Image 1 (tube, rainbow, N blue to C red):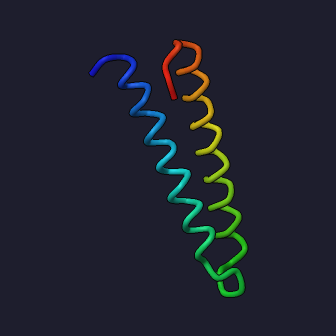
Image 2 (image 1 turned 180 degrees about the horizontal axis):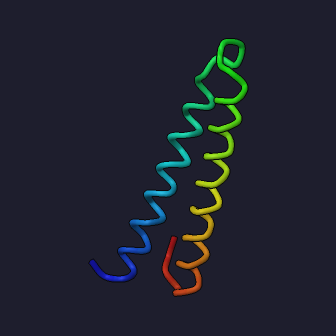
Length: 66
């Protein structure tokens, strides 16, 4: 695997994680879900978004297409 494809793979994995966590957050019933669980999922989603953006910035720095 070349370095560009490795960067693209990492970005796509982070993007997939962000989308999966967002689907979970959108589908859970906030009335019956404990606040601590919603908080943990939201925090995990935020961290995954930061990682995704970091990978995108690295790709831009190397001149890769997104």
